[in-house]
Image (cartoon, rainbow, N blue to C red; front, side, top):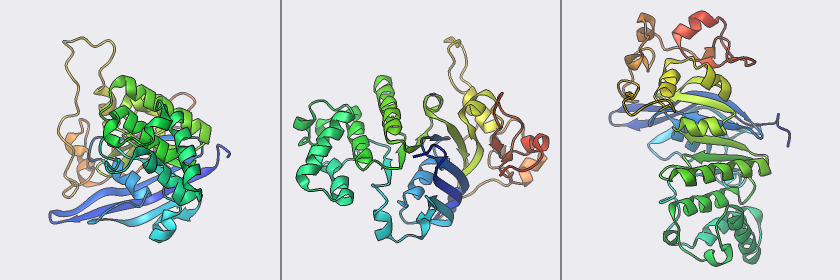
Length: 338
């Protein structure tokens, strides 16, 4: 599989939820491209649209939510146009997802080995003996000790870190082209987090797959990403390679996220640097730029017009720059980006 091969192309994706309080635009015009062997990290505060974007790619949006526009092209096949039966042949086989909470994502009534083997039985057409053999291999591959003995254990007999390894084993069972990991280190201690991230990287390298990593942890982004997509209020506000995002952030929201990090030279007396205010109600967004009520540099135009995602100013040395949705950046950058 060539590194230049495009695995996924998302074009103007829109996922909305019809609520009594109004129309909630959880994902509102998201576009990106992901190539084989590359990692895209989707970053933002809770409610920014990260998880809904990943669930939309898997077509796992439940009512009252639905995909109302855009295309999700997996190898030029539009997933939004497939029937559920057609989609089931791809989901869990060619595209797999590691869900957010390892403590609840596994079914407590089934043995962990059976839950991993299910994908092999459904998609690979192997018999139960072969599925068990391959499942034991997978459990060993992801670092579960004594996999033969632990095949018959139930989820409650595993720690949080081991449950996360079970989820990863199930996701990679069919060697997917695209792996989506939604906050895979949530609620794990830092040592286990590092092990899980290293495992994901090794697996991706072995499968030559594309990886989408949903996270709010910028330390994880620095360690894992090739490209970064920063989301706010359902929209992409900045998109570019990881070096550019960290070295020359251009959107005020991205700058705020980076400024809020605790630094090595901080002391106990150093005040925290949070972004003021709170994320907006997605069913009642402010006029203009959704970030303007919290933005330290907003101008009159920000209150009236929503900015488009355009090519920003020159990025880090040797880079091509980021795409940024900000009027102030737009004024200095010139032509719209692609």
